[in-house]
Image 1 (cartoon, rainbow, N blue to C red):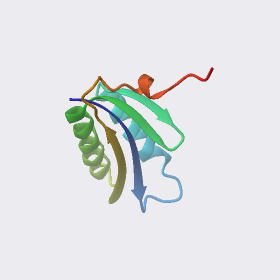
Image 2 (tube, rainbow, N blue to C red):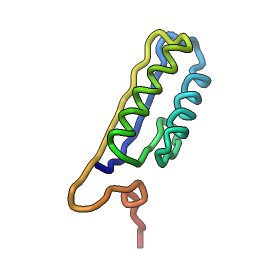
Image 3 (spheres, helix red, strand yellow):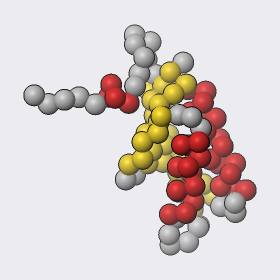
Length: 95
């Protein structure tokens, strides 16, 4: 099942700057084979629902293995059955 989503991973207790673990999480999502678009507060993804969920699990596994003790991920996932969802389809042009 195709899906689109937004993922925001927040390392807790990682110090003042969380740039490194957040960028590592983004690299893991890029390596997953999903269509990935970084934005200021998270990452948009497009692909198979199972692959999106597996990528989120991989982010948690890797960051915990790297020493991040607490990690919170906020995930929004959208699916539909009338047509294939795409990130591009979520955008609209103004006349």
